[in-house]
Length: 392
Ligand code: TGC
Ligand code: FAD
Image (cartoon, rainbow, N blue to C red):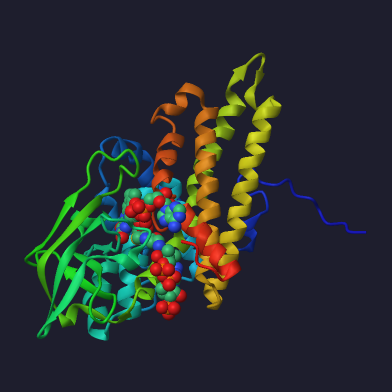
């Protein structure tokens, strides 16, 4: 007979997933959590209310080594992918906009330069990006539809040693604050990737205003009107649609973890509220309905944690497949959005106030479930993997 001691499960980490982390991974999670508690949570509700990205945090994110933190060399921290995931989880416990900033900078801009760039390009941009001195944005989505980037209309035409870019990109995170844009354009050679620098004649960016989601994040339109880009700014290793899609895999991986953080923020708020709110002579926590709802949140958070951790271990081993990322992005973001909506309801009328975090996360997650591949796109990606039939 087993004599193992039975520890009471932790309400937030019911299966002790933290126990599966190594010491370095825990330290990185704790350092990021401290930053979020001390520097993000005190200001983020106001930033969201004011529709303002808290750019004053960029340097601190860089000083903590969080920009491009899972890349090797070029002043990047060289963390493993589980540690990178934990960083995303903690940042998104603060706000999806902050995690978005880090995803775009690290996974969508630094990663393609690191993976597809020449040595000269890496030396030129990556250290400054890791230090937060050069900000990037990633232009793939176009006004006519983001789910099918293979039909992009932005065009690159060769002209001697240069390329001429014409077209537009839509819904681009960090667009107006970016010093460089990683831009994907179709050409006679198929889809190619370019680094377009701020100030290049013909390249302009404009903010998309009055969003009701991701208000503490900048979202922009990019315009390319006869933009002359030197061959030295083309990413030489990026050929075909697979190149931008491979960047999405990196960012989607981080989002699977980030969604857990947003879900935890809403769940803990509901847990705390129901312990205190007395109605009909007892606390809400003593009612069957509330217990079932909280139990369901705990179940979904626990499942999401285990999914992302195993995904991270596969990524670190080099065996992760992009359809596995699709399943986790779909599952975890759906779980987080449902939890945020349910937590908002449990808080009653107070739940519509920015004094509580749940409505802010709920509104943010409406973007998170759409960007980086909508829920439908991820369901169909898994479906294609299972059946061999593309049904997009
Ligand atoms: P398809 O034939 O499937 O693919 C073309 C080539 O790419 C390969 N591939 C991938 N590689 C890596 N990762 C992935 N996720 C990949 N998906 C496909 C594929 O194997 C193929 O390679 P090869 O060598 O055979 O040529 O292309 P398709 O045109 O059928 O499209 C498939 C589909 C619908 C899944 C794809 O277009 C898609 O993912 N659409 C969604 C677009 C999207 O997610 N856009 C996001 C824009 S960025 C953003 O939202 C940033 S938000 C800010 C933040 O992150 O915080
Ligand atoms: P569409 O592709 O037009 O889809 C509309 C609807 O049709 C969706 O519900 C979709 O699921 C559904 N649909 C699509 N295909 C099918 C099908 N075959 N069958 C059934 N239904 C289908 N993009 C970037 O490139 N860079 C960024 O930095 C970036 N940041 C973003 C930030 C925010 C806040 C937001 C909201 C978006 C951002 N995006 C970015 C764009 C994002 O990736 C796209 O919004 C997303 O890919 C969906 O494209 P779309 O909005 O054009 O919707």
